[in-house]
Length: 303
Image 1 (cartoon, helix red, strand yellow):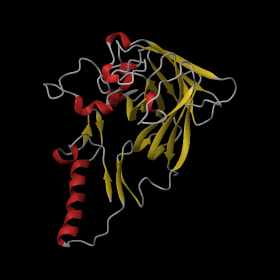
Image 2: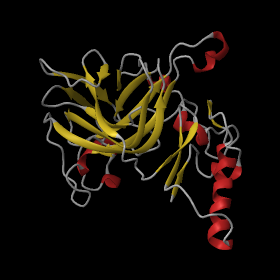
Image 3: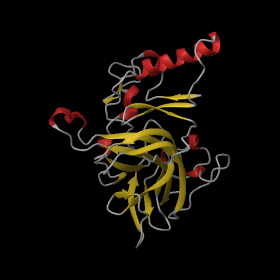
Image 4: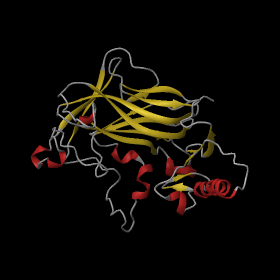
């Protein structure tokens, strides 16, 4: 059995779990979890209750409801590909026509921060580290080393339930590179009663992949400069409702400091032995075309 909730580390056991940062869950998910846990232990340890438990109980963010499933990931989900496209757009239609691409310069000496600055000490006064996973991503929107692809507004709710993965077709002028991919729920303009969430960019999945490990984690290999390759990135599992009127966004960057260490962008067999002079700028290119179709696989639930 599995229970999945919308918490940061340990939040299920120490708080009501009614929110995370600016994101409201509209119910006390931590209290709910502890009640489910209590019922489970009472049956298995004391024989209290009928012992009927759902295989998977998962909180669905966006719609803010608990959902139950007979398997996890949910077998009812159907994979749909969300494709990056020209003009910084994305859609469920595979790109056709002439090849497209977008490039950006990644500079390890000026990495993209993982949240807004100043970044406080983890356990210091005013620390925000517990909520950075849901921080509004608009703080990177003006950076030239971050690229975003945004869909049209949804005409109906889109429920994504299960494992998602990114297929990034990219090249670099260097010999190593990191690819950080985010799947973001872009909120619409809202009324005067909820300006706080107007156009909020909520990350619902994020992960990094170091290019040198594209073939093997045991035997890393240098990238070949300017050669397009596919990088498959596990974005883990989510249960999220993108609501009608919202937009989907694919966001890609190559630094995420200090969540991950800086990549020199020059292949060094042991990256911990990299010298200051090894850290160099590199131009990275993301491709979107029929042959090199950068996309994210989304497990979509039918109505």
